[in-house]
Image (cartoon, rainbow, N blue to C red):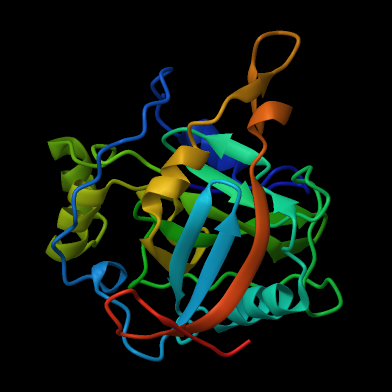
Length: 257
């Protein structure tokens, strides 16, 4: 899928290609995914993780600096600077994604640690847009395109990539048997692979991410969904802590910044 947007909410063109969603926003039941794919393995001790303290609860995601170094470096730098403190999840789309990281709260802003200059796509054959993927939201304006401070969590439903037709198409497009099986089990947005950067994966708190996708959203004057949470359903990211994974039973944290 060819995307890019002119400083409009990230993913807009991708949304045009998305399948229709159920009108009833019911948090899905997600079973543990038995897969050797990197995104479904337990983080290793010392891996860099991000802990999102939000008004709906805590979400923890492991980051992949070896695969998406610029996306991770930018995200970590902004988080440590307090950029994400008290920002909002400004987009909530059931069965697709929830998006934040814009200090303006509108979805049209963003920043980077490189004097606001964007960074390039870092797509990897090893990281996919499975449900729970933490991804860099890209925008384009004129001749400038790339990532900024915005990010999104994939909230695709568990059965969103499980049909025989979808699995056959993935296989024909070069996905491994393991990746096809992972998409069938977890759900996801394979049409964004190689288009957006995956730089992390939720390993704890996916129920919180799903809850973010189920809040009431504002309808415009024509009755169309804007995907902006209503004032009453606003979701706040109080703080993002960058730390390392530890193997204690309670997933204890060894804070590094």
